[in-house]
Amino acid sequence: MATEKSALLLHRQLNDLRKQGSDCFSAGLLDDNDPYIWRVTIFGPSGTLYEGGLFVAELRFPKDYPNRPPKMKFLTEIWHPNVESDGSVCISILHEPGEDKWGYERPEERWLPIHSVESIVMSVITMLSEPNPDSPANVDAAKEFRENPASFKKRVARCVRKSQEEPILD
Image 1 (cartoon, helix red, strand yellow):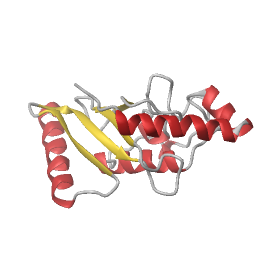
Image 2: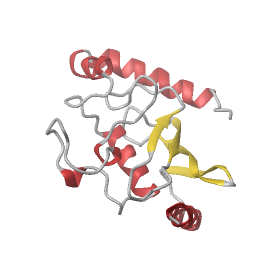
Image 3: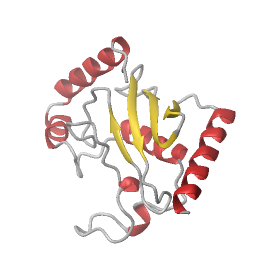
């Protein structure tokens, strides 16, 4: 029963996104028969180091969505303090609900069932605009961001160029 409800909810969110559209990203199902795996393309936010980039990611939803958060992973190479080297996104709203065992995040900053695909992607776009090197998923990127901004900018620029040149294939 929960699976049917979550599938219906994800289909409704997909239909809403198709109707309203977005200037910041595009999203859709990887396979029309599986509402639990989405492909998202984030357009690098203007006025940031990521401007002009086309960053493709995958959102994988659990069957008990929206009670638990999806996992998001960039398929396009990206250099960012809050993105692990394998592309996995690390932001508070994608962390399991409840208390943070390290005490860094308040429960209301973590996953809540009110989040939608749109709110998740918009949070990731904000993350691209405002890196948090104090809570890094990629320690090397965070260190470079703080200690060698010129080198960090060059590396991000390479990722942006690469994202424009290399299509992501299934």
